Length: 256
Image 1 (cartoon, helix red, strand yellow):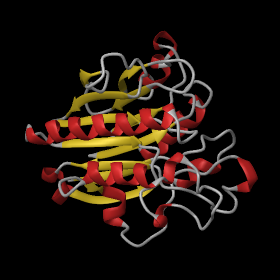
Image 2 (cartoon, rainbow, N blue to C red; image 1 turned 135 degrees about the vertical axis):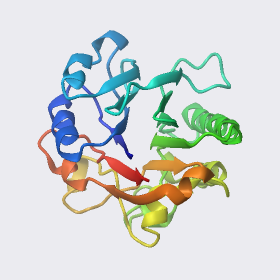
Image 3 (cartoon, rainbow, N blue to C red; image 1 turned 120 degrees about the vertical axis):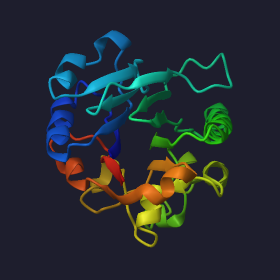
C-alpha cells in the first residue's frame, strides 16, 4: 500500500496539479491538507473521475483536510481531534482504509510566537499526542500523516538564521514533536533517510525553491505494528517545480 500526504494549499486552485500527480504517482491513499474550501465546494466529481473516493472536512481560509483512496472507500471514523469541544478548526480527519487507520493532520502554524497562536499550537500537539497514544493502545495499524508545521531537528531545515524566531523550529515545538513520536512511533521518512537533508516545503519568496532552501514539515508516523512493513519512503520533489505549484511537495511511504 502506497500512502501519501500532500499539503495542496487550495485544492480547487491547484486541482490540475493534484490530478496530474495522482495519475503519475498512483498512490493508494492520499491525505490532503489546507483545502481552503467550504464543505460543499470540495471537487469530489473531479477526484472521483480519477478513481478515488474521498472523505473531507472543509473550511474556508487556511484549513481543511481530506483522505482519498483508490483501494476502497475510506470509512470515516473522526472529523475532529478530540480534547477541546470548542475547537472548530478543520485540522484533523481520520478513516479506515483496507484495515489501516489513517489520519490526515494539519497542525497549527503557531506564528507569531510567543502569543495565543503559539499556545494553541502547543496545546493542539499535546491533544494529538494523547489521541495518538489512545489509537496505539487499540492495537490497530495506524498512520498519522500530514503537515505538522514542525521541522524536528536542524537536519530538517536549510542552513540559515532567518527562521530563528519562527514557531516551526522553536524548542517547544520540537519537544512536542519528540514527545508525540516517543519510543513507539516511527518517523517514516527520517527512518528511511536517517542522515539526509530531505525537505518537503519551500517558501515562494526569495527563490527558496531554486536554492533548495527548504524545511521538512510533512511527516508520516507509523504505529509499532507497521514499522517492519515499511519498505520505502520519499518526496515527489518535481511536483513543487510545476507551474502554480503548492509550496509543499507530496511525501509518500510504501507498506508491505
